[in-house]
Length: 414
Ligand SMILES: *Cc1c(COP(=O)(O)O)cnc(C)c1O
Image: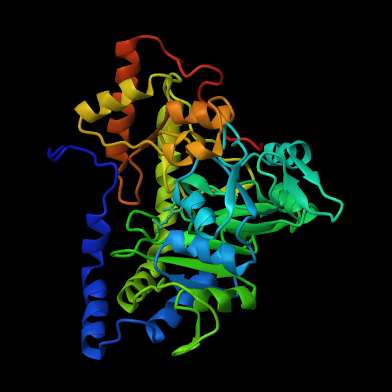
């Protein structure tokens, strides 16, 4: 794919070239002060990111995976606990649970939002767990205490947090948001009667600054957000060998710091994030307009009335997903699958003993989803080309509406 008319799945070059001066200034500053680890650049970024997320604190760490692991440990998840999440996510979600010493168990997603289905969480808690005489909620499949929930705000859209938080409160579970794909996403909480930011609703939340995320470093990075001062302080110790001050170790920790150059770069880029997210929403609206003007050939992403998604990914569904993907590739259009194998079907989790069919919504999604090009710099012309090729493919295969069930969906409250 080297044609000038090719449309890449992701364009990471343009935004960095646009900010070249600002970003190289960060590096120059670091060279002139040798302030590579810790220091004012970290604190400045942490303050700004907490403010962006409407939380009291943020703690910058080395990756989204570490952010999740530290958030789980700092909020009291102990070895042997069960933490519930979804199979339709990146493996980092469950790796962090395992790395905290806990055991991941799954509940299925909602078929139209691709995020944790609160009804399925309720069913899990009520039918697959028992309460001991001591009042502990225990999972039947593992016999272990259920202590946490990790809703994942996948593709830039928040999970339906009100009912998830209500169930968690009822069963005394700690909620850690996996907001690694959702910087700036918002959720209308009926409970609080206002829009709330991703990262501000759980006990703590994890963000990733992997380069391709909506806010990306020029390398690795992550952050925990929380309004609990104790959790923020514990995460800051965990990332730095459990030090309260240099060489005074209150506990064993990790080497999980964000470096100062990345913090400076992220601080510079954070100033552009709202604008970039607005552009992503405009691109999503343009895809929708283009698709709705034609026959229904793919299922469009659904944005419930309580959601303002930031479209980290623009995910459609097609019955012949692999055929469509091949066709687009031939036409010079990059796409991705997020993710092709649900976690309960991954080799890494064979020991958890889940079976095919255990999470049918996740399995069906994995077979049909396709992520189209989506980034703030994508042009309307490029999008018209993408949609044109998708319609072409539908014409070639000549069986429209093969996605079955619902064809193109319009946005509506779930
Ligand atoms: C990217 C991502 C992570 C992990 O972040 P890293 O910075 O790559 O460690 C975790 N969860 C989800 C949903 C992600 O997309």
